[in-house]
Amino acid sequence: MDELFLMNNLWVMVCAVLVMLMQGGFILLEAGSTRMKNAGHIAGKTIFTIGIASLVFWAVGYGFIYGEGNLFIGLSDFFFGDFTTMFDGLAGSIDFFFQLAFAAIALTIAFGGFAERAKLSAYIVFAVLFSVFVYPIVAHWIWGDGWLAELGKQDFAGSTVVHLTGAMAALAATILLKPRLGKFNKDGSVNDLAGHNQVYTALGVLILWVGWFGFNAGSTLGVDGAFFGYVALNTQLAAAAGAVAALFIVWAILGKSDVPTMLNGALAGLVAITASCAFVAPWAAVIIGLIGGLIVFFSMKFFDKAKIDDPIFALSVHGVAGVWGTISTGFFATPELAALNGGSAGLFYGGGFSQLGVQALSVVVCGAFAFIASYVLLLVTKAIVGGLRVSEEEEILGLDLSEHGSYGYPESMPEKEEKAGA
Image 1 (cartoon, rainbow, N blue to C red):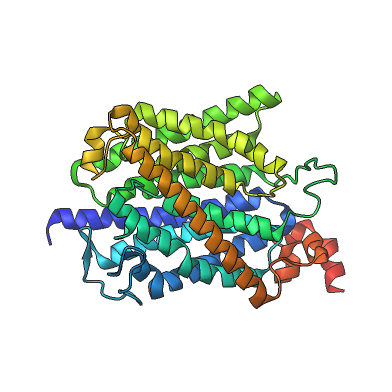
Image 2: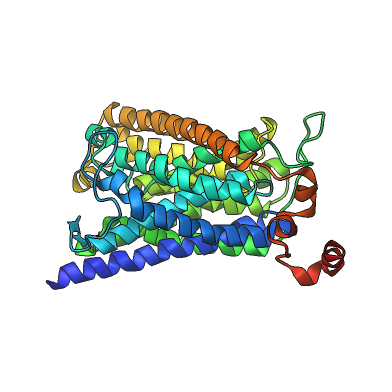
C-alpha cells in the first residue's frame, strides 16, 4: 500500500472519530438547554440511540445509500462486511465508519423535537424506523447514485442530507407531541422554559464546533493537496460570523446580548456552510455564516409565534439554516472550486439559475419527503408503543425519574427522591 492511501485512510478515520465525539456536544447542548429533571434521560438516550443507529446502518442503512440499485434506493451491501472493498480511495471499513457517524448525527438532530416529553419506547422504535426509511433514502438521492446526484446537486458535507433531514423529522415530532406543559399560555403568549445550565450549552457548542472540522474537512476524504485546510478555513469563518451576527441582532432588538441566541448563531453558521464549504471563497463563507446567524434569531421567534415548541431549536439551527446553506451554494459556488469538486458555478459567478434551481429543488423534495415519511413513521410508532408522549404527571415529575427511576442530579433533589421511593 502506498503512503498516500494510508494517510488518506488515517485522516478520514480521525475525522470519523471527531464526528462521533460531536455526540458529546449534543449531550451537553441538549441537557443544558432543558431542565434539570430531564438531564440524565437526555444524556442516556443519546448513547443508546447511537447504538441503535450503528446496528441499523450496518444491517441495511449503508446498503440503501451506497449499494447498487436504482435512482431511488440502493439494494446491495446489506450487513456490510466486505471491508476489503475500496470506496472513494478508502478501505471499506473506514468509509463505513465515517458514513455511520453522519447517520447517527441526523438521528440525534431528529430527536431534538422529542425533548422533555417523549416516551423512551418512542425513541427506540423511531430510531429504527428513521435509520431505515428516512435518512438512507435522502442520502442515496444526493450522495449515492440517486436522482439528485444525477442532476448535479451540491451538498459537500450534509446541509440537506444530515441537517435538513433531521430537522424535518424533528418538526414532525414537535407537531405530533404538541408543546411542553406550560410553554404557551391561553392568550398565545410564550413562557421561557429556560435550560438549566448555559455553561453546558456553551461547552456543547464548542465541542460541536471542533467536531465540525471532522464533519466538513473530513468530507474531502483525503489529504492530497491539503484541500481539507481550505474547507476548515471556510468552516471557521462561517461559524465565527454566525456567532457574531446572532449576538448583535439579539442585542439590537431585545436590548440584551442573549447567550443561547449567540450560541445558536454559531451553530447556524456551521450548518449553513456545511453544503458549500468546498465550493465558495472565504469572503462568501463569512456572508453565508452571517446570514445564518441572522435568520436563526428570526426563525426562533417565528416558531414561538406559530406555537411550535422546539426546546433545542433544531428547526431553526438545522432546518432553516440547512435550507439557506443548501441554496447559498447555488449563489456563491466559484467555477474553479465547482470544477475541482465535480459541480457547477453559482449564479453570482456566471452559472445562471441552473445550479440554483437544482439546489432549491433538492430542499423542497428532500424536506417534504423527510417530513412526510417521519410523520407517518411517528404515527406507526405511536400505534406500536401506545402513544408518543408521557403522561402529564410523568412530565411534571421529569423523565429522569419517570423513565429511568433515578435523577441525573440526585444530590440536588434528595427530598423528591426519598418521597418517590417511599
